[in-house]
Structure formats: C-alpha cells, structure tokens
Length: 179
Image (cartoon, rainbow, N blue to C red; front, side, top):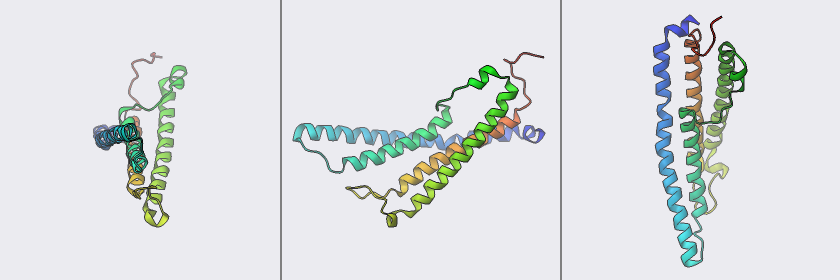
C-alpha cells in the first residue's frame, strides 16, 4: 500500500474534483424541480379553472422528473445521502471493514460503469429507435445521457474514495482498541 500512501494528497485532490459534477447536478436538478413544480401548478389551475387537461403536461413532467432523479443520484453520492446500513462495522474491527468497504466500492463501481455504458449506448440510438415522448415528441437521448453522466459521476466518486481508502489503509482508527 505504500504507493497509495505516497499519493494521498493527489488522491484527496482527485476526490475533491470528483465532487464537482454532483454539485453541478444539484443546480440542474434544482432547476428541473422548479420546472416540475411550475408545470404541476399550471396543470392544477388549468384543470380547476377550465375542467380540462393540458395535453403536453405528462411529457414535461416525466422528462423533468428524469433530470431530478439523475441529479439526486449524483448529488446523493457526493453527500453520502444514499441508504447505508453498517452492520459489519458493529460486529467487526476496522481491519475487516476496510476490506468490505473496498469490495463494496469496487462492486458499486462495476455496477455504475455498466449502467452508465448501457444508458449511453441506448441513448445514442435516439430517434431511429423511436425514443420520444408521446405528445410533444421530446427525444429521450439527452435524458439517457443525463442519467448516464450521473452514474458516471457516482462511479468516479466511488473510485476516488476507494483509492483514497487505500492511501489511509494503515492509519490508526481512534475507535479501535489497542492490542
């Protein structure tokens, strides 16, 4: 592990850079959430006042919600807001949890890489595959790419955390009793 320990400062900086895309996703997600709110209010008022539905409302709502989900994936990863149950940490020493953390991050990296790849491949098909919304014919391609980029940002963060974990592998755990 000395190789990673020598580069701890670089790995810490790399992790900080990997936190920038989730912050950008938070801004974009906030805008999409505001659009979703505005569209929902417009639909409720239109239904209440005119007893009619806006035909394009479902398309805009669905696509806005897709951007909100993409933003939530990336931002939640950056903030550590995803659900996490630390049962192993209660039962095992830090030496064991360091290994399980590395394995979990490696598996997470593999899953996010495969999912991002699949989203980019499917999104690249675009209009020839007929991936458009029902009433406004909004192409799904940019939304596939947004979800793929979100998962790629999550994978980048997992990789940087795993490498940083290797750099601090031999550090003392203040909560672990001395043998």
